[in-house]
Image (cartoon, rainbow, N blue to C red):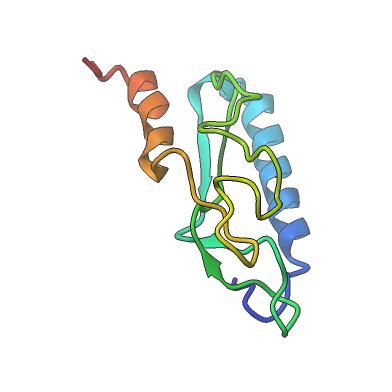
Amino acid sequence: FDTKESVPANLQDINDGLESFTKEIEDMGLNNSVTILVVSEFGRTLTSNAGGGTDHAWGGNYFMLGGAVNGGKIVGQYPASFSSSDATFCGRGRIIPTSPWEAMWNGVAQWFGADID
């Protein structure tokens, strides 16, 4: 789905689907054998456009979940503020990422047993 004209109500559908899937994986005893990655192909502005949606921006949103995931962390640096005085802010709700999007794959590669040295 796209959010250029409005932020979709189907975000709840994604939440419900992930919740159902993770519950099923846990019920099957596979929680530590499955990792789920949810990715966006590009970032979106934090501020709304005239249509009530969002425009293309830097820094996408990605998250990972699963029983073997050491979670509760933000990869990169979270903005100190969302004001124009923040070094990562570049206008109209666009945030410059502090880490490449590929950074999340490092942990996945290690989980698969890849030698990262």
